Image 1 (cartoon, one colour):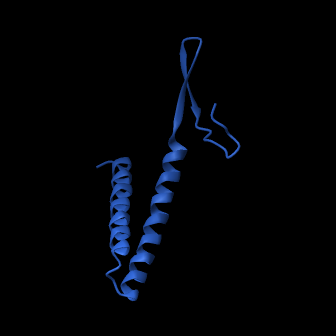
Image 2: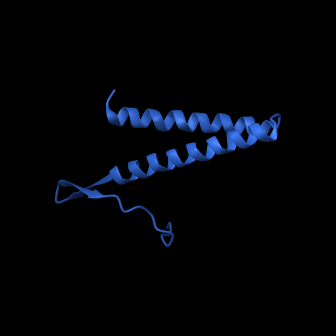
Length: 85
């Protein structure tokens, strides 16, 4: 498995674990201590997912065509001041 595939798998696995934690917490059948432990794990998983998404965002490139040729340009993202027409 390549490093890129492993990274994608880790993101998916972390996201799935996070979803399971949310389901368990929403059921409300856990003790306070169990809930706190799951919450702490969820926070850690959230941070891992955010880091993975940030790495992925840095790799995003946009293909642009100019005079029949394709150019790769860095992804600029959307700022909070961008509006949709």
